[in-house]
Length: 323
Image (cartoon, rainbow, N blue to C red):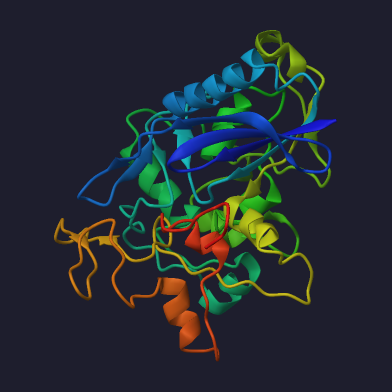
């Protein structure tokens, strides 16, 4: 049995087919870039229907090349914190707010959680514009027609393809509305969000599996009998990829809004590129300038060599010799 792994990210949609040992099959990768709309007002949005079309194109490409014929399981990692208001037909009432969008503000006169520390202990989140407790009232206030319900980008996209598209507890943990102990929607968080549980995605039970809708199965026959696992947040997937899979290990993520870069930066404030330390040209390595990870770890450890994984992102590594 092969596995189709989907990456539902902010900058692209990707599909990769792996064998039963999780080894990628040669050439079995499809990718489509997505257009992220950034505004000076703090907007960071995606077009939901266009995003769905990109995913469909990836599946079309893999199917046309015969890569889906032995797929029995579809898994996905996906961006956290996204939200889109939907009408009573499940159609978007506007663009999808991504984790980059900073425009939401708490409603006037709402004091926030009664006990912020207890709220944080339950939900793992603060009353903050990045979470649904602030985002949902802000979106509802700006909607031109009544909002029927809210969904994350993933639930909207998969809802168009699958017989059911509940929200996984992994993705729900990024909304700021989930009680992490009971794994149900938190009553106080929902009150702050001015939303009832019926206006939120249903939560996927442990071990949930979905299947394609009949019309989607006709478009991609090799996936007609495949099982779809509940998606996981990309940060959680990153932990697994870093080898942090049991209580004896910890992982530290060092990143900016996009990716960690080594040796050259783009200055969003000035519009200039190059090293902020010496002004070296773009695409050149600043002599002696470490990457962010090496700089941070160098202050803590006796040695902080660059891993081949990070070095592969510099454009200076020979991937055959690893020098």
